[in-house]
Length: 94
Image (tube, rainbow, N blue to C red):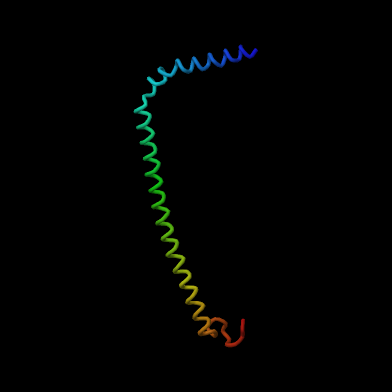
């Protein structure tokens, strides 16, 4: 039984080995490597574009956030300096 299984495995290995030249003719190594390099370069270029766009969006969001915080700080300052303008009644505490 063991010899039979070993024979099947050796046959599969031999068949694979004998098909290597045939496979190499179908896919030349130079074309495979250049295709891989081209695809990798395209992926890196697209990643760079996405990162640039994300950076721009973050800058816009940070600017809007800073403006919002500035407006809220100004409202708080006005409320502290002039409480009657916020509550309508000085000293009401509401």
